[in-house]
Length: 167
Image (tube, rainbow, N blue to C red; front, side, top):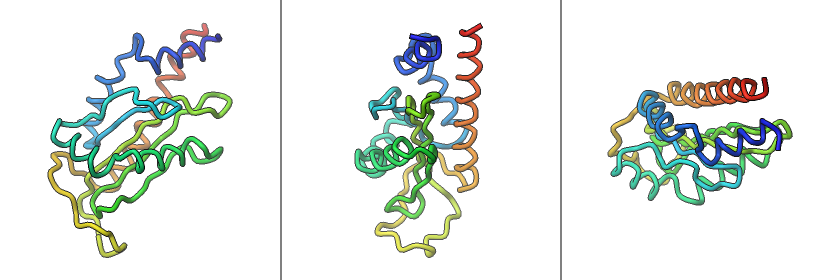
């Protein structure tokens, strides 16, 4: 097993890398809710959210069907490694960003959810009204920025750590 493969395996198994703590701090700072999955869709971390918010998100938004669809979108496409989707609620959006190895195989997928403020529900006919009960509320632009920052930060961190292991 080469250094890159070994590092990826250790990262997936949370060995020597405090993924959950880093993810929790990132989510709180960015105002989003975050979950990390491995390349097969199994959880690597738990959802970064307060208990009541995690229960609501898991029940209404981050259902196996919704997570599975966005996971498939970013892992099965050779060109799409990041996606943002609406939900049944006008104020809730989900996104995913896949980290892929040098052969294009996904090894980590970050799933984000956010309660979006100042979003115009008239633009689309949503089947449900806005969903409340969230302590973190951000603009759509901040949500997209958080997704980009997460991808860039993790990619940079992995590249730096892998190159350090290879030297």
